[in-house]
Length: 256
Picture 1 (cartoon, rainbow, N blue to C red):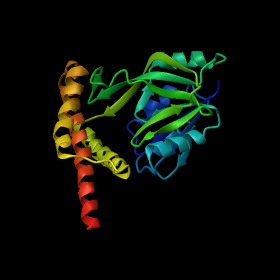
Picture 2 (picture 1 turned 90 degrees about the vertical axis):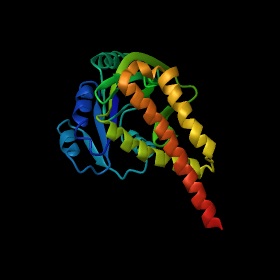
Picture 3 (picture 1 turned 45 degrees about the horizontal axis):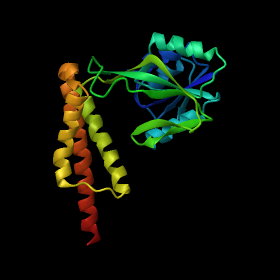
């Protein structure tokens, strides 16, 4: 099994080298599709013999499928720039790489680091993800900004008991910035689907999200950052709904 690695980047100089080091000895080519970074991302990538391609960003799903289609091998290992493979997962991929494979996709666990804390509850772990698959049998789908690999119905999949490490946010401010950005994308998607937001929903939906994350998904076991994650998750729901509601009001006003 020959493997192509596919990574998308934009100003990832603080993450990309860690990611590349974790895959350099297990893949047969590395494709990096970059959205015109202005930092040292390109310089770092070229140290690792990558094929570095610049492409306009039109969405996470579109960019990841573009990268996948640039891969010359059937099996694609797709990572985000802020992820790396553990040594255990590297060994397991090498093991399966040497077999006559019976599987079309391999599913890994993802363990996220939030502000220096490994989050093992809050609905963030084990966070199973397909990240190695036969591109003839699947591709990126879902709904931006939350992409997922969609496999053909008859595909054969294997869960691997090893982790991808995800270095998500280095500060709470970074998380809030992304929440603001992603809530706008989500509101736009809902608006295009003619979905509605209601005042009571704006009040109660964030409360339900907080209770679900902090209590039922044991976010309290993640300590202070579990509380932060639960509050930010509730805030994300609130922002999405209030932005959708505002779009509805603007659209109705323009119809008059």
